[in-house]
Image (cartoon, rainbow over all chains, first blue to last red; front, side, top):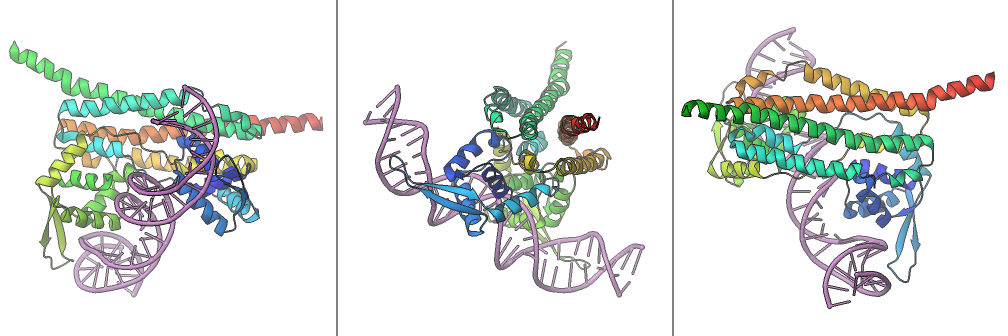
Amino acid sequence: LSLKHAILGFLNMKPFSGYDLWKLFNGSVNNYWSATHTQIYKALSELAEEKMVEVEVIQQESSPNKKVYHLVGLGKEELITWLKTPLELAPVRDRFLVQFSFSGVLDDKDIIHNIESYIEKIEEKLNNLRSGHYTDYLKFARSKREKFLWENTLKHGILSYENELGWLRECLSGYKMLFIDSDIKTNRIRKA
Amino acid sequence: LSLKHAILGFLNMKPFSGYDLWKLFNGSVNNYWSATHTQIYKALSELAEEKMVEVEVIQQESSPNKKVYHLVGLGKEELITWLKTPLELAPVRDRFLVQFSFSGVLDDKDIIHNIESYIEKIEEKLNNLRSGHYTDYLKFARSKREKFLWENTLKHGILSYENELGWLRECLSGYKMLFIDSDIKTNRIRKA
DNA sequence: CTGCCCATGTAAATGGTTACATGATTGA
DNA sequence: TCAATCATGTAACCATTTACATGGGCAG
């Protein structure tokens, strides 16, 4: 139900069209909740059926018509109730760890390649997060409190990828030290 | 597709029944991939249809009959191919951050309550991870390499919850400093 | 004239949760 | 006698992904 609540959260700031929301979910929000346009349009029409939001159709000449959604009483109540409800820890589903933990049957070079390739992707992601083009929207914050929350949401992304990166690098150097360098040593001894 | 690959990964160690796998997914694996028994039984019958695994029915008197699944050639190939394929970063979906980032419309006490309640749940989870009853299965590792991978998978869980906890505590103290203490100060000044 | 932006959707498939269903054995 | 463990599944639903579909305007 988080997608619907995220949408209600945005509509609580100001009215948006499905397309607007899709752009939001492709921007900074993508760092903590991802959604496709298909999902968003469907959620919006369901929210309209449930009387949480109201539609306003805007006629346009130079581009297709727009449906702008407004948050109404019932939707606002639902949003506030949800925001006040403490959440349980989410079930974890980490594909990389599944792969990693079963990789004992592979060769050293394959294991190392998987780790290095994942490190590269995380570094790229981190560069992207740190580049500062996610900090633009902070100026739309309606209060100091909101700005604080948004800044820390962004920081959360950076911290968790940094943490991930730290773990990966430790794994990589640990792996090499235990299974590669010692092989070389063993080979040297054998040769000597 | 990760659930099926995880199952293939386990069957590559030794044959298991659906029930056995379910217990595994409720144990240490639950820390990086969660699955219900419904899902597991369904995946197993699909894997059997796809000729990845073979079923052996074991007649039992004192309890219901068992279906033990064995990994066969095609399944093993599929497993190895998947293990060698570098993965993309998974899309992030963090309910807590959705709630957190839209909480600017709540009262201080509600925001603080949500953070504190999440902190408690993470502390509990961390105690559980650190308690050591997930380290038992390490003795089943078939090689030093496998033991290394399993230990680091476990460590990943601990590190990421510690990281989460650090962020939450920073948020909480930052929030109080900025929005609570200064209120008290302001009130004091007003009173004076 | 090619490709991107605007703007909306439908349909099919896959993945995951929740509720329902059965039935014997064993230990508190 | 009550609850847990063993052992398997079906059915309905909700969430997510991917492919298909349309069509004008505008910039390089």
